[in-house]
Image (tube, rainbow, N blue to C red; front, top):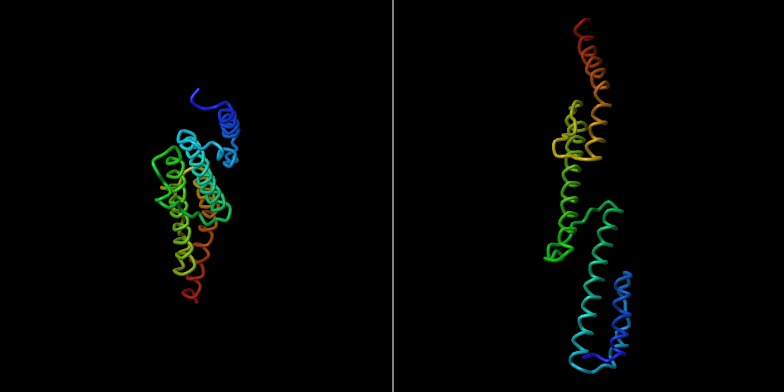
Length: 163
């Protein structure tokens, strides 16, 4: 065997830990093996640990961003061509989708409050899933009130003309 039994047993313990989603290991236990082949293997284990921790930290930032509502995008330099790339790209698409919905809501709010356009509605063309249901239901709920409000406004406009 090109590695000794002690190193092999320590390596197996680390790999079992990795398989159980524990990424920390005591790298000092490997320091006693001073040999090029051991150093290379130990450095690879350290790299695996560092990369995994970096991805865990990025995912914690994502979850925090979703939790606090900031929807911060993942920096493009973080997105490397690896197994996490699709996850990070999908998350950034989610952020873009959220930004579009937010802009639509602000546009309608501005249209109603600043311009007085009471018939403004959210556009559901670019919206899918739960947001589509929510926006469609809000628009549906507002429709009867809009009709009543239009009739009331017509009546109010007609009153001065009648006198």
